[in-house]
Length: 295
Image 1 (cartoon, rainbow, N blue to C red):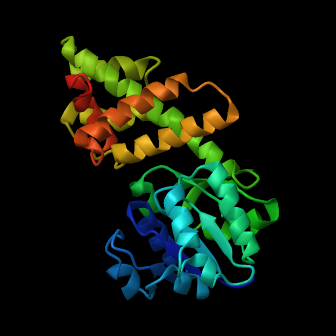
Image 2 (cartoon, helix red, strand yellow; image 1 turned 30 degrees about the vertical axis):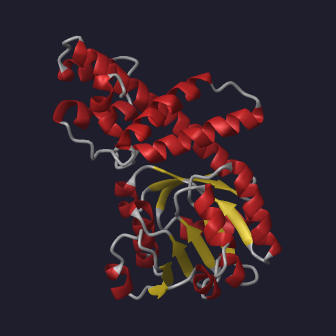
């Protein structure tokens, strides 16, 4: 890129706000899509960000559009709806999907973007809103190598570790595998913590033993504040979204014909929590919710 491209962001929630803030700090001209689900955008607007009423208007004024929405249905909607991004896409513009999406949907949407004259890459994120604010996200990118290198300066403005996984859709496939592993570990430790508490094991002893053995790692670190201090904010990721991600993984595994027995069990546990009205609770709260048998 010879000059700073104009960047648009659709989805300025807990993750998207941090991305927008760091893109703007890096000197990229920024516009954002107005939406009731956004975080408070006054700081961004006061610093020069444009505020667009429609996705079409966002696309008409931008060279690169970053999507930071919940999942495949929301990605498909913001791209294809009336007054959506595809209606305003500039020739050669790039759509970057940082959402957690189904690879099959990703390939369909990439084809739609290309038919409209644009280019597409999937770049789902790992880490949390804290790292988003710090500009230290991890990105898993799926696209042709030349496009990856073209947009890398922009990606580096809000990410610390950027991995070119492979062709279009590979980033989203890797993200689902990653989230199955990370959320699976968290689910197992949360259930174990509930059983340990019922058995009278001191919570601090539970954490110490796991940390010195095979249970140590990021999953335990993220649950420890909840286990010891009843503080769920170390992982600001709600149970409904965890259920969505594991559901995507089981669907993908089904498409590939691979085993999904462990994932099905985790999905059933998360679905039980959502049906019980706990979908908006942070994932670490599973530690307490599972003490009552998961009901």
